[in-house]
Image (tube, rainbow, N blue to C red):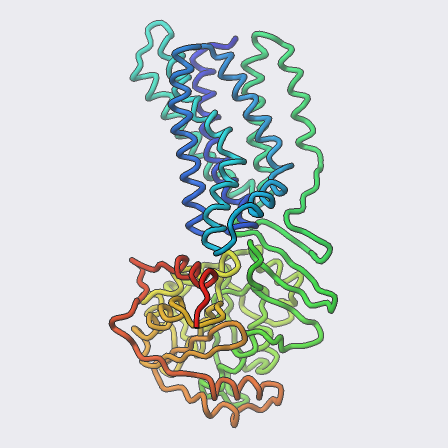
Length: 501
């Protein structure tokens, strides 16, 4: 049995790596089913901390009763094999757990679903990993001339250094490069090899168990939520993405839970019947005439449906900068959504960061950024954000944001009131299943649109904007979203959980 202080410290280091690596992986493995909102992250962190707390307690008691490294390594070995099995049974288990979760509201399903999934898949093994530190402190301090304070400090330090590596390694490399499930396999094998190394020093037969690790590296079914209509699926550093194609050949880009369609591409028709069609009318509100060049900023490229329509109707008159934070979304748009034919300036950057650093002025800004299928990233809704947008617009420029809800509710009111806290003129229009909120420093004449549109295909949308657009005044007594307080996700949950009028 290896009882050296060096091996004890090595065990602390690698168990620290495994703890945070599995925490990161847990958040990613549940994302296709319940998203990766702050609610989900809260549950993941809460379950991990609860498991570790229980592990610390049990590990201390077990170390006092049986201070034997062989016992600890055997438990770590079992934990490694448990993690090794997770990628194979995770998705059937998650589907079963979600089916058992009350579905009276999305908030309930997401909150309880993520808590149950994380507990069942990761709770028990993380309890074991929590047992490691107190156990190792006991062993380290029991050596001659050792002191408890030095033992606790050394083991805690190395475990924390391991946790730092376990945070960055999966996020920046393993998950984007190889996916969540293979990342779990890597760290499961790390635990197994660590345990076998220690156990084999006493009994070489334990080394033979290492042969059981090898099948983990052989190919296995890698689909996550794929079916016959799935053309492509991947996990980026930001989200799970899926490209689907229906019987008509129309392609859809969806994120995470698949409750929303981020973009679609119909090779036979430009107009989609979705809210994208209405964005293509915005240049006329800004005073467009054929031959007059205008500059557009799009925050949130996704599958480039908005820019495809603008380029189709306005050609080279439209100079478009499209900002997209996820590089894999850009790659998907190039491969499946005809992005390269649009001749855009695509910028891989966070939308708000781009606004803060770019000196360029725009005639039109369109905010269509979504995460987890239906959630507007809260930094793109606040009073401060709209101030930054206004600073990037020309004096007669306008901005429009798509709010993905199907009835009037607190989320729409909060976003439009936040716009109105910055812009003198704010307008709300119900378009298809969404709301389009348009804001400008100057008055926008929606009623004149039908007389300005030259393409007959756009007339129905122009008539709807002319007849169904309402001007929204600023309400000082209503909620204004700020960088300090923007409960967008909670307002979003109410959208999908409560019927409005």
